[in-house]
Structure formats: C-alpha cells, structure tokens
Image (tube, rainbow, N blue to C red):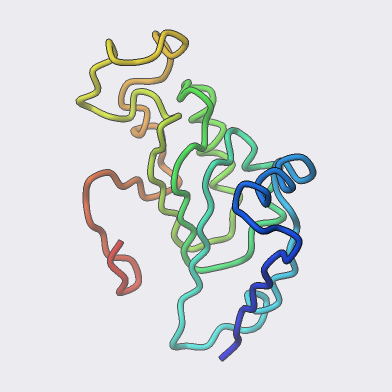
Length: 155
C-alpha cells in the first residue's frame, strides 16, 4: 500500500507564521505531485479527495486536484451564493473525473440554509445569495444535515 508522506515546513514555528508565509506567496494553491493517486487502484481501496474554499476558482485549480473516487467539497465554493456562481460551480464539477462528488455548503453559500434568519446577516450580505440554491446542483450529491452512504462509506 502506498504511503503519503507529509513533510512539515520547518521554517515556521507557529501556525500563524506558516499562514503568513503561505498567504503572502501562494494565495490559492500549490501544485503537489500526487504519485499515489496516479497508480492503478487496488480493488480494495477508495481514494477520497477533500477540498474547500475554492470561491469561484474551481476551474482555475482543477488541474491541481488529484484523481480519486470520491471528491468532497467542504464549502465556500462561491463568494455570495449568487445563481451565476452556483451554476458555474455546478458546470465546473461536471468536468472533474471523480465518480462521486459530494458537496457541503459553507458560510459563503448564502441562501442554502432553509431556516436562515436573514435579519441576522451582516449588512454587506443583505439581499445576497440564492434561496434553496442547492437545487441548482445536479452534478453532485449535496448533503446538509444528513448521512449518506457512498461506496460503503458513511458520510
């Protein structure tokens, strides 16, 4: 079985210092050589890829997303949850090769929470988002407050 080795960045002594280094240089993504995902898959394994915070940039980074069987996008795929952002994300998902694409809304997907009290939003977020915007996502499995089973794995 292949092992993924993650080397710590030795120059950084605290998470804050590491963030400052990455934020100032990398901003969006750093390409990594994922050799284990490119090898033929064993019959008894499932490759899971987790991403988040793509903020309308999924198509820009799609070549950096490793191959896998299940892709989980853990939120913040838009900036404000506009219908245009949601449709673009949905189209971008269709171009990814993963067998299953699981999507969970983040705090930037305004309107996805059915029981949201919009009066509690900060002023800049008033009148933003798309009510029930998740209904526009037909190239993935959208989950919110529920358990699903995919390839014998409960998510």
